[in-house]
Every structure is written in C-alpha cells, then in structure tokens.
Length: 614
Image (cartoon, rainbow, N blue to C red):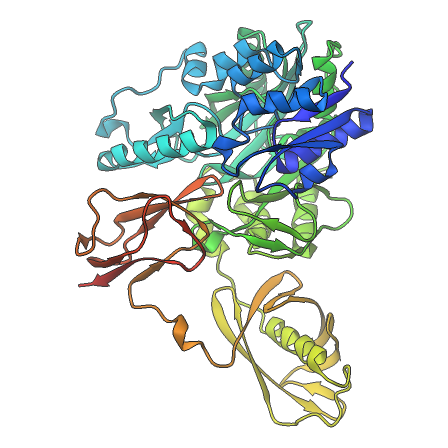
C-alpha cells in the first residue's frame, strides 16, 4: 500500500490531493519553487522540498529534480496533479524507473493521448496541414498540455504565421513543448466532456458528462455536471466514444475525453490523461472522491462493475485574480481574506494573508455548489459568490455572478462564444451610489479622534473621492450633533466595519474592510483617491503602460523609435502568470519611445512605449 505521496504540482490541486491523503492516513510531500516558498501547499504538507528558481521551466517542469525530491523525502508514490508534467510520458517513466508508484495512466497511454495530434489519429481524425481561406476560421492549438495555453483562433490568413509563432512560444513556456497544430474551429459549439476512470482489471467507468462552454481565452470559467439539454442518445454516444478512447490505449486511472457538440453532433477534441480542474462537479454528483479512487487504482484495487448513480446537479466557478474589463489581465498582490458561505465547497491554494505573484496561473480557488436541480445549484452558487468575502486584488467574481444569472446560461443555451457576445454587458453595470458613501462614513469613524463620537465635529461638507469600476466617484456628507448625514439618505449606524443606511425607505447593510487605500464594501472594491492628484504621475499622450507585472518576452520585429505604426498593430508581448498578453498600438502614428526590451521585468504602470497619433 502507498504510504507517502509526493505531489508534483502546486496551488489548489496540491492542497486538494493532500486533503484526501490525510483522510486516508497517507503522508504528504510538497515541492515548491523559490516563489512558492511560503505557499499554502508547501505549508500544509508533512514535508516539502525546494526546487531552486522561480520559472516553471526551472522548477515544476524539471522531472529529474522532482524524482530526486521524492526519493530524498522518502515518498513511495507520485501524483502529478494537472498541468505541468501531468501529461508527460517521460516523467511518468522516470517515476516508475525510480521504483516509485505512478498515480496516473501508463506512460504508453499518456504518450498516445497527451499529444493531441496523435490522439486525433487514434480516433481517425487528421489535422489541417495546409490552411486556405476556405478553411477559416481555424484554431491553432498546442499539441501538449491544456488550459487554453498555446491556443489561438485565426480568422484571417494574414494572421496565421504570427499566431503560430505566439502559440509555439506560449506552449514551450507552459509545457516545455512548442509543437502546435491547426484544426477547424467550430463556431458556437458547446464544450462537453466525459469523466472516465479505469482500473488494471479492464473496468472502465464513464462518469456522466460535464459542460464547460463558458470560457475566456479558451480556458474554462464555469463548469457543470451533468451537461444540460443533451438527448439520451447523444449522451450514450459520448459515453461510448470516451470508453472507446480509453480502451484503445489500455487506459488506467482518471482521465477526461473532451468534445465540441454542435447541431447534435459530437466532434472529438482530445483526451486529457489526468485529473481535470473541474473534477469536483463530478464528485458532487456521483458522491465520489476521485483522488481516493486514483490512489486505490494505483494500488491495484478493482473498481465495482458499475459506478454509483448520479444525483442532482453541480456547478463550479473558477475564481481568478484578473480584470475581465481589461482584457482579462491577471492581477497580483496580497489576498487579505477569502471566505464563502457555508454549504459551498471551496478548493483553494491560498489563505488569508498570502501573496499572489506573477509566475503562475492566476486561479485563486474553485467554488462548487450541489443541489437537487440545475436551477437550484446555479442560484446557490451565484448567491454564495455574491456574499463571499474576497479582499485583495481585482477578481472575476462579479462576472461570474452575472454569468450565472444571465438568461442564456440559466436557460442552458450557452456555447463557447458566450463571452465574445456578452463581455461588454457583463463588465458594465451602474455603480451603487451608496457604496462609496458607506466607505466614506466608515473611514470618517475610524479617523475620529473621539473614537467614533460625532458631536462637536466640523459641520461643513466633507468630501471623499473613490475609484470604483473604472470610474471616479465623489462623496459628500456632513456631521451633525446626532451623527453623520447625507442628502436623501438616513445614516442609521456607522462604524469602521459596518454602515447601515436607509434610502427610499429601504434599509441597506454595508460591511466595510479597509487595507490602506483599498476598501471592500460588501462585494465592491474601491480605491480611495487623494484630494489633489500627484502631478508627477502624468504620462505623455499615447503612453503604453504595463497593465500587469510580468516579463517582456518579445518586441515586434523591426520595431524602433521613429517607426510608423497602425492602430491595433502588435508592438510587444508580455508574459504574466503563464499567459502571453499582446500590447498593441492605440492609434495610427509614430513610435516616439520604446522602453521595453526582451527579458525585462516590468511592474504595473511601467512605461513600455509611446505612440504619437497622426
């Protein structure tokens, strides 16, 4: 039997695997980069081994170092998690050759399916080798790995070469393999997948379906099980195809077979030879612990002939430190607080006070709700996210709530183009004018040298300015002998953490938490602005500032100061949190300054270039 497991991964998946191991009495070993020295997964494991460096290529993608770490820590088994080396047949072989138990499929199965090009060949599907205008749109895709990295939609032939170059670079950085291929892009399809689990005795389970259609940058955002609206016949066909794929490579362990479904037809995408991020929705519906079953299968135990019966519906939302209104730009900084209401499963690799860095994926957590029906599960998750305390960098919480409540989603008519159609509406909303007022009143109470006594305070109007949802808001209130007052609003109570206001006869409750000039009022994030702007913070018109911390990985070929550029022309590329982000010219004009060079580390707001319009 397995006694000690090293998890060759980080973040929430490492923490999630450790949780099951503890329940089973199995000791745990973490590996961590220098950037993750104080990460939660390194803190909660029974033992941890340092991988020197910060970049993935130097740490979590170094299979040789991880095998040495397992041996040094006395582990007798390795679980790869997902991402990084989880679909690397060479790593799986190295683990086995070292005399360790590999908690995953045989290396031969990984080799056959981990390359999407070879997987399609096994399923009788050939990739495009010569793209013409008639083939458009097409999808450029990394042959190894997943998570939307190394993936590009191409709608113009003129863009194909640039997108191939960008996809290769991103795939090589994320997976250590720059191979890419091209396939037809199915417009308005639904992303549906089947969870499989197989043992060494020939039993293969097809554990229902999942719908993962809501995606940004080809990376899943909201997932659910079972996939709604499928006919029994199509569901049976998906199950049969998934089992066929597994049996074709003598699969063992947990895996996922992915499809695009359009017009009632299933198009095979790939087989992921690992556990998926969205596995908790399947666990909730089937009442299983897939990690525990992975461990049992790795120990040689047999599965029951048939899986348990599915019950109810489950929905999962991925909480990211990112700004959807700003091109999904990843965010960094201190996560001060992360809690959700009771009854919601929260898988996370962070806890209060942890720092979110620039080196890895910006996912903070996965929130999962289970209920007897889809409508109840969706409502429960949306309400829980709305009430969650998420204090720190900008997150995608608001767009998750609005997506879950969008009529296209609640009626199960969504497809993979959901955010292409609705992003502008989902990221724009009328701000609540009482939120900045509550922030101002809480701040005034905290600043009162009388510990909250409002009497004898100045009666002239008090003014505070806040940035909220990309806009500036000015708040005016004044003090009276009985407390603060604002036009049209009754102030029922105000202290540093709680403000009660009554407007139009409705009493509202505002919970306030301040961290320097960053304030959280209920689910809204504000920034307190100085009364007088800093004149040194001004930049020349046309300045391109880094929207996130990261590394300059490329500058457009031939780009120098004095070059004429066109509006929308790519100028340079930043890499942050394992994704490439393109910086483009804001207008047609002349590049008058170019401050960025490849390899340069930049912070938010760093000047990259200046384009003066014509």
